[in-house]
Image (cartoon, rainbow, N blue to C red; front, side, top):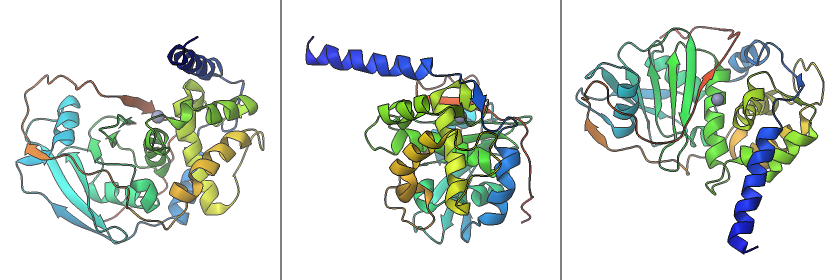
Length: 295
Ligand SMILES: [Zn+2]
C-alpha cells in the first residue's frame, strides 16, 4: 500500500472505531452534569472584573452577522460589545440579538468564570432568543465561535461549548482530540461515559468530560459518581493533554483568535448558511440554575 493510501486507511479505521465505541452501556451521571456540577461552579469560580463597551449601531463582526441572521435575528437588531477582562488586555467581541434571553452581563460573567487560557480558544461569543436552551460551536480552522440559543444560564453549558473549541483547537494540529487515537483508546478502555448526551458522539463525550475536568481542577476530586473511576482513562487523557495549558486557573491569553472584521449589520431574510463546521445544536436536560446575575 502506498503511504498515502495507508494513511487514509488508518484514518478511516480510527473514525470507524470512534463511532463503533458509542453508545456505551454505563453512564456515570444519569441525570446529566448540571445537577452534579453547576452549584460547585457557581460557588467555586468568579469572573475577573471586566468592562463593557457597546459598539455604535450599524456595524457587527462578520461572523456575528452570519450567525445572527441564520438564527432569525431581525436585521438591524445585532448588539455588539467589547468585553475586556482585567486578565487580558484584548477584548472579546460578543454579540447579542436584541431579544436574546441572556443579558450581556450574564454572557460576560459565565464566560469570565473560565480560566483565561481556556477562554482563549473562543473567538466570538453570541446569544440569541429561543425557548429553553441549546447551544452550538463553530469549530472550523477559520472560526472559533460559540452560540447560546435561549436561556443558557448554567456554567456547565458554557464549559461544554468551550470544550468543543478545546477539542478542535487544543492540539493545534487541525485534528480534533476527540477523534485522536489517544482519546479513542481511552474511551475504549473506560467502562462508562459521562452521561447520555456524551453517549451520542465522541466529541459530545469529550465536551462533557471538559466539564468534569474543570470541576476536578477546582475541587481536586470527582463528585457523585455512579460507578467511581469508570471514566478515568478519558479523564487522564484529557488532563494529560490540556490540564496545565487550559484547565487550571491563571495562564495567559497569548493564543487568542483575532475577531472577524466589522461589516454592515444588515442582512436579507433567508440568508443561506455558510458551509462551515458546526457542532450541535447541543441539547441539555435537567439544567439546574444555581443563581441569577444581578447587574
Ligand atoms: Zn455539544
